[in-house]
Amino acid sequence: MNEPLNDKGVIHRYRHFLPVSDSTPVISLSEGSTPLIHSPRLSEKAGAEVYLKFEGLNPTGSFKDRGMTVAISKAVEDGAKTVICASTGNTSAAAAAYAARAGIQCAVILPAGKIAIGKLAQAFVYGAKVVAIRGNFDDALRIVREFGGIDGVAIVNSINPHRIEGQKTASFEIIEDLGDAPDIHILPIGNAGNITAYWKGYREFHAAGRSTRLPKMTGFQAAGSAPIFYNQPIEKPDTIATAIRIGNPASWQGANNAVSESGGCIDIVTDEEILAAQAWLAANEGVFVEPASAASVAGLLKCHSNGRCSTCPFASPLRPGAKVVLTVTGHGLKDTETPVKFGGFTPAEADANLAAVRAVLDQS
Ligand code: AN7
Image (cartoon, rainbow, N blue to C red; front, side, top):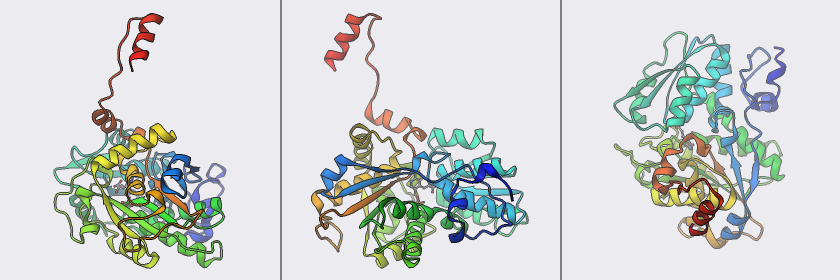
């Protein structure tokens, strides 16, 4: 299919590693190719070379675009006229955008009152049908699963394996940028699709001879929404990081496999640690990520400061020059309410003259 504007996205670049053929219509917004940003101040704190994979720079502002280009392309190939998903916000934004691009319908089922306003706006603006249920994400996903098997309808949550396939391309890019896999990979965990996808990507490039090692996969859950850490579903998950407010992850087993096969771990960070890490990263590295994404940074600061992971059973000093990659999964502009509310940010006012403005600046 001749679509010159679609020659940049992850399907185009990694088609030999993806479940597509020449007859698959490529629905793309040129996702992927996000920057791997060296982070000097985090490196100093961790005693390692730390990089941020800034997935907030994807077309809809989160990593979900990587999986969605594959899921929607395959849905269109299979004749779907409607896609449906449950979401804590980012999946619905991506599904709505790629469905719009494909010219098909999108329905999103969200937990009422628990979606960051930027993400809710995206679903509406991209033209999705939006239903807010009186329940949480896990309830929404249960309902979406019941849509399975209806003709012409494709489920585009990460229970759809095409989503995982697309998301694994982030590992490929990291290996290409670093010249090898990192020693440790850290990411936030919600439904656990992403850690499953990264681990698959790292193993595939390793098997293809594109890297010499595999990273330890380290995932962080919010303390109030940590079913994998506590090894039991959480009925009423709670955290200010609404993207990862999930009590019964669909890819639970995938996360466990990634951690046990790679020698990594799953740990928790509190909401206070998440908010502090979000503010610290923005003010010290110039990178503004959403709260869920800051769980990666909070985790690094908690466990890997001074070159040592202090809590995991594999605790050991990092090797000199060790490379640590943190996926920061979504853009800070998705959810401006949370940091503004908790940071108490209100600008000081001044009269409209130089002296008054300088007086205020000198005070702050
Ligand atoms: C910014 O959008 O589950 O562990 O429905 O939006 O692969 O679920 C979002 C998850 C991390 C967790 N960071 O990734 C949804 C949804 C951000 C996210 C996660 C999400 P997974």
